[in-house]
Length: 343
Image 1 (tube, rainbow, N blue to C red):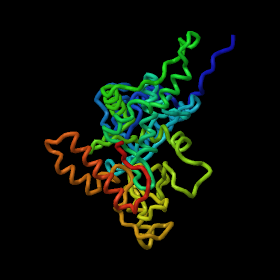
Image 2 (cartoon, rainbow, N blue to C red):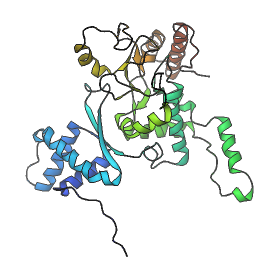
Image 3 (cartoon, rainbow, N blue to C red):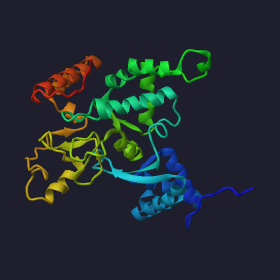
Image 4 (spheres, helix red, strand yellow):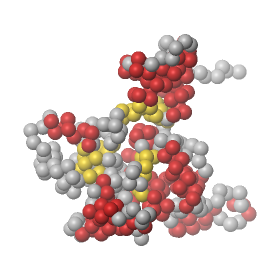
């Protein structure tokens, strides 16, 4: 009988590195501050005596633990990648423990039911197709929009049922996707936020977290972008400065231009240029054309509804979204794209 294969162990790998990997996997993602606290706890437990102050853990210490962990998990098709948070804590860097060959079913849906996995895919479609157009690049959904995709389109559900068939031969075949109840959707959304896959903003919009963007980066590009067309608008966009995915930031005022910038990148970007004009089309960069939920929340219709929100609850929130739809339709020269549609 052949010996079972064991992954190679990096030189210097020890129990503290093993404990770090286990804790990292459980958390899913880490900032430098969280990493310092984690390493201090591990070293304190190993060495005994007085607790180690997390502030004594340097950036180099943290980098060494990350490097050792990455070397250890790479043979197992895992990886550790990082990106800056697009709008929190001044763009702090986030490291994520990811499956190197990931899609929604293998990561966000690892412990989910088939119906929940199917819902997650519909949610992603809503973010990156339904509410992401050349007119309004929202790439986020509010609660009502998340509930709207609780069930698959009727045609899709009927097609799945027809494929399964009703005869005895197919009696053991998987049932068609019947979707989720609204209470189940709300529970799932809360779980995805708690696990760090989604983030919920103060205005109630759900968007992918850095952990999800790092995990699903390649899948998102393959699923939604046209690899053979690099000159037209694409659903997944990248920052002109740092080249990372943009789901929250700024866009050129010229709608057909493809330049996007993170808020956290723009100061350094413009400091290195002579004037504040788009590097591709030379249009003046105003800084008030947004990517992400601000494509909705910055509009007057949403702002007016937010002012009436006290005591009005969800109905006022929805009125704001509908007002934003009308406003977008009126001030975008009649372009026929679909935006924040509530039909």
